[in-house]
Length: 258
Ligand SMILES: C[S@@+](CC[C@H](N)C(=O)[O-])C[C@H]1O[C@@H](n2cnc3c(N)ncnc32)[C@H](O)[C@@H]1O
Image 1 (cartoon, protein in one colour):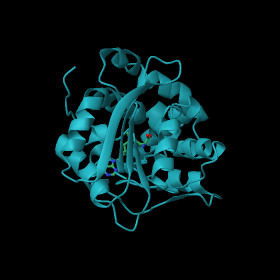
Image 2 (cartoon, rainbow, N blue to C red; image 1 turned 135 degrees about the horizontal axis):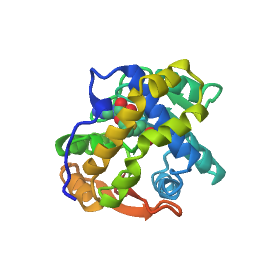
Image 3 (cartoon, rainbow, N blue to C red; image 1 turned 90 degrees about the vertical axis):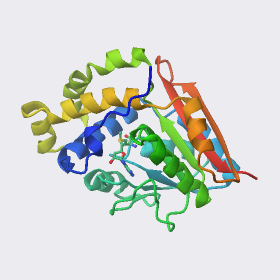
């Protein structure tokens, strides 16, 4: 399939924060419930070991995405890391809920644009399921910013530009209607915007479909990395299976060359 840079609702600055937050809460729920982060953990563990990084700066965190589960699984493998959640449109209610009582998981309340990350945020940068949001010039800017600041980066994407991925995504509103009672924290507004006025299911349906058309292939990711013009960085891209599902996780990892 040809790549199509159609628009996603949650990227629009005018889009209501309440709907964006509830939509990204669903993505966090889905990834946690079905452990969709698991194939990323060994890739990340190896990259953290190679770079010696002990902190992760997660970009485009949405409702937290898979980060709490990733942090837990890394710790199980003996790799304890501090994680900072960030976003251009921070989902503060979700960040507060996820980080409450944790010293290792924190967040930035002010907007952090992945194309120009504040230099005081040091650590291994991760980005889950958001790189496809960036058109090529902006995607190069994300990678260049990491390379110029000497910060390793790992891009992980569930969206995949394959026709077979579109069919299950057509049913997204049904998944949402089933999943919503199990999403935490409980919010009356979650029920309202899902069952009474179904803007959350419609947003997830549209953005989920569009995401598949916007996904980059491993060779396109390598091409974007080669366009950063920043030397002293090594890039590798690929795909790994996601458990027993037919899906594949696409990744790009950039580390300072030793
Ligand atoms: C599909 S969500 C992914 C959320 C989360 N990482 C996950 O896996 O569930 C994409 C996120 O990217 C954020 N985003 C979009 N453009 C951004 C930018 N330029 N800088 C930082 N975040 C951005 C959106 O606000 C949204 O929360």
